[in-house]
Image 1 (cartoon, rainbow, N blue to C red):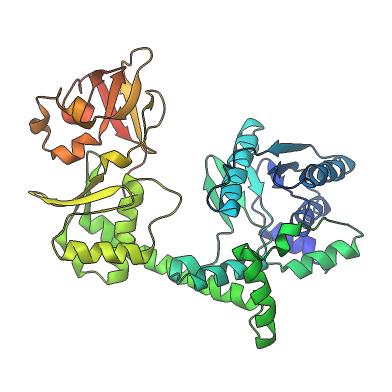
Image 2: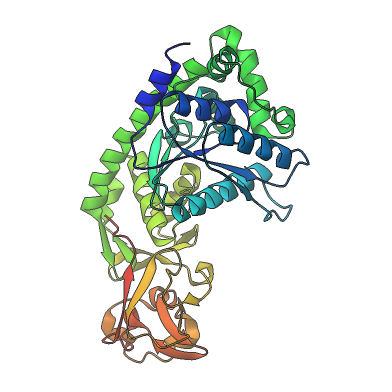
Length: 397
């Protein structure tokens, strides 16, 4: 156990400033004390989800520990749950949003989270039960960049038991969240199932190794899909033309390429499941126009084209913001202008639309600048495109 701090430090990517997400539970408390044992001076943040009466006192305990260690601490309060949908998923997303805003506001370059080998194993079992493929079963990332922050999971090489034994040896305490024993949550059921599997040798470490092998397989599959994407996809004014040569690729490669297309046109946290994309491929093979996750696939003179479904596009926003997750406009924008879909009302005001060479369906969901009910510009439909330009936030390839 004495080597835990050294192993922890070796798994942590260096950054100019570090933040730790600490709930008060054993995993995150170990994260905190390991960081201090390594001579680090991180900022500490706790998210109070407001779901349990004890949460405020637990956040106060973390604040007290941080103060005793000479570290800054802030508690963030989530009050956004509408009591619908998956509570744990909503809480996770809210937690990430709040911590991200906190980090950016405090110029914190990297945030470390307390996920362990047990989390890998529990996630593996949960997704196995749902029939997940390689991507779903692959090991969660140890680090990634998102929203200008380097996110890290430096405890993935440790089991929950390793960390608790180390804390006990250091004389440290933590709190136990009673929701961790509530069987109505999928993760709790997976945790209990994992305990029953351990006598068979299916330990958290073993399952984490399997997930790591699958992560390597995912990398290989993505490398192949990237090459096929470069050879068969062509971006045109925010739509994607798909070369029929793609259908010669292995089925798994076809699915991955279409998932990339869908996420580029309709950005989301996750791509549609492989089974859904497989059904889409079957419909396209029959020559049917089809829609999935807010993206339409239509046949035209240029072949198969993927485009944004207009009714799934985001509502209007300020013209100086990113619209629909991927569009920005530059040019002479009037005060109070908004950015949104061209839709049928705006399309009727674009007499030169045929000259741009895009189908009507693609233009309906294209970005347009509005001032109230007045169309100011529709750059992709040839209306005032010399004054205002629309640019995708990220390239397709």
